[in-house]
Image (cartoon, rainbow, N blue to C red; front, side, top):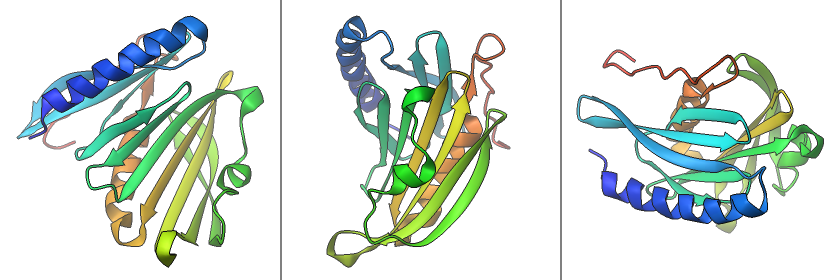
Length: 194
């Protein structure tokens, strides 16, 4: 079972930093962790992101923690540091394309264009394999989704022997993501069958 105190401490620290940033930049993302239902021995933890009047909520995958947050970006990392997932929300005018977003990965091989849908919005992406530090094999995948006046950039980066776990966490975030696009955010309660 997750240690709730760890999430509360991280959440309060992030909220304090964001409160200061939000006063300087009203377009800054604000983050909040909320605790939902229990399914078996697992406490469902949801991450709430707000930017202006836009609100997004997703389930924080088990074994994944918030390792960093900035003005428009959140970094999630598995407990062992094998993979990380970033979520960045930017105004459409500042959005990058998938190729541009992944250009920083030097030595990329096996580039594969992808697409996907999040909250009913289609997005374009790219998946690459590249050599990381000490020539380790790594996989990076991004999905860029337009959402009205915003663009949401999702990036997963993992070592090759943790691809399955990273993909499960990445998919969990994408599939559980909800917004206030059509009214208040609808929280889908999890059950043992979910």
